[in-house]
Image (cartoon, rainbow, N blue to C red):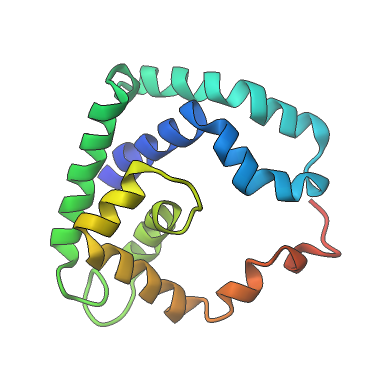
Length: 157
């Protein structure tokens, strides 16, 4: 699937390869107390190098960041066209493809990072942003409660 082999890799390349400090600041540091120290050190210092190497071996990382963003924008345009005005990709009810696409698109739409794909969706593919909201509300009515840090209290990693 294009999204798993192309669009998501573009997001990972940007997020983990070139913007790890912002990712850690906004998403990981509030949960430091839940993550074993060595795991975090690996993630903080080695993951950027590993991700850049992985995407270069994949082929996508051999392009400039601007080109990679443009590739992902074409993917998002295609998804937007396929979705059109339908509530879900296969019609009125969510299906497996919706769950898969939600898992990828939600990382662009809701992650509190200033990523090019998020801005592109907001400006050029508003139906994808509405789709992500619709999936969230349909399948996870307790989303806001589950996203609070307190939902992890008493749980072990």
